[in-house]
Amino acid sequence: MQTSLPSSSSSNAKPEMKEHCSHRKDCLKMIQLILDGEATDQQLARLKVNLESCQPCIEMYHLEKEVKELLTKRMEKRCCPEQLVATIKSKILRFS
Ligand SMILES: [Zn+2]
Image (tube, rainbow, N blue to C red; front, side, top):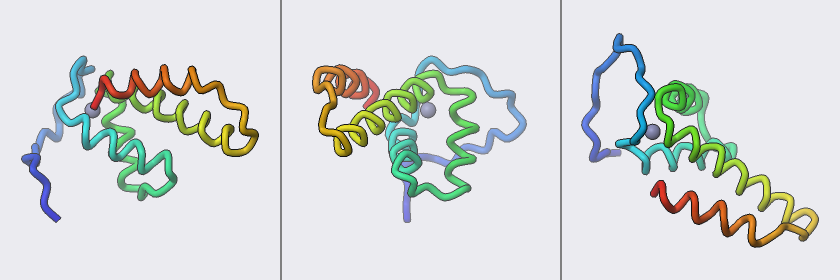
């Protein structure tokens, strides 16, 4: 499998909180995997490290999680406020 991203080797650098994520698509993909419960332990660990230094991804993670929970509730009870989902979805779109 090939990725278009160059593999950076910044190992000992202290993580700085980034205001802009340069790898949103990767992050989003990983976040969705994790929220779907399909991520490996390795992916989980990677995302955890990333979330400690990446502000946009932290927000994205929480938004995705909210949507997921809302959708789950909706499937269970069929009483999810659509407006809320739409609002959150539009926020997520800003990230991708
Ligand atoms: Zn990120």
